[in-house]
Amino acid sequence: MKRVVVGLSGGVDSSVAAYLLKEQGYEVIGLFMKNWHDDSVTISNECPWLEDSNDALLVAQKLGIPFQTVDLSEQYKEKIVDYMFNEYEQGRTPNPDVLCNREIKFDVFMKIALSLGADFVATGHYCRKGTIHKDGKEIYQLLSGVDGNKDQSYFLCQLSQEQLAKALFPIGELTKPQVREIAAELDLVTAEKRDSQGLCFIGKVRLPEFLQQQLQPKEGFIYEVAADSEIYRKEAPVFHSLEEQLAYESNGISYTPEAGKVVGKHQGAHYFTIGQRKGLNVGGTKEALFIIATDVKTNAIYTGQGTNHPGLFKKALRVQPSEIHWIREDLKLKDGETIEVMARIRYRQALQKATLYQFQSGLYVSFDEPQSAITEGQFVAWNIGDELVGSGVIS
Image (cartoon, rainbow, N blue to C red):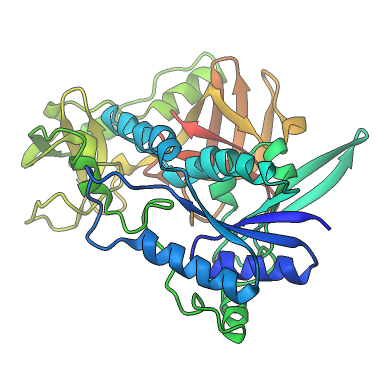
């Protein structure tokens, strides 16, 4: 009998995942990850992890499976929290959920599971795993979940073949309503529980407050750049190669205070991200102001009015060589090669037609349609059909 360790988070998805595995004849062990107990950083008055670990325990008791809690807060702080602060300080916007899966759930947690004699680790993600045979080898595929509304393959875009080999995603074939229905039939305490928002495993975190406790405030100006500014009417230079053109398209515009007018003040450019609308506290504009650029060196924020402001859009992005990750290593591009894919630059975004171009200087993703709010530090992931084959950090 194969042994599976399920990451029970205290939510409905992982509860049902554990139940399905038991039904399929696996020996199931429930493990709750505790990832936070730093009292110097107040997160919120409620303590959701206590409630969550309690719910996870109740589910395990109901399903009749052994349960234990593991404390991963040290690794979490080092691998996720410190990394996040460092990224924000440099003016980038990290994605803690993607990192958490790569560094915690399918690394630290997986090693603990395997030390308990597990054959597999399972999570409540809405995605599927496929297996194909190629050149006498088994290759694992990361496929999107059947529920188009909930597909979470994007969050697993940094997994490796070794990690996928040991992973199971029991609810990938189900829709969220079906999962809730199973939980209700089993009378699980998590059946009606709302989906958790906020940082992976820390519970109800409000990011700006969290950042402000670590990053020092620094007052600076908010500039508004007009949509008809001549900065958007500049002629593109003459390109001598495709690589040169892609580099130009992915760099975007460098703004200086002369490009706009001062419309307010902020407490630190490193708290803000491209495409953000809330938290600017600038009124009196006809349309809402969106952040089109931040500059942590000069501590300036550049904004524009409305969702169609030209400053929000770019046609291409670059991934540095060290940040390119192929789940399907057999499909990896060689220098000078290109491939057509469907890509997304954030979770929940509809897949967009794009072409990948591999050069020594990095990988360029060129979209058929210009994309809004391409954000440094976030992940771009690319699909062929419903298979997510690779990803990278936007540079």
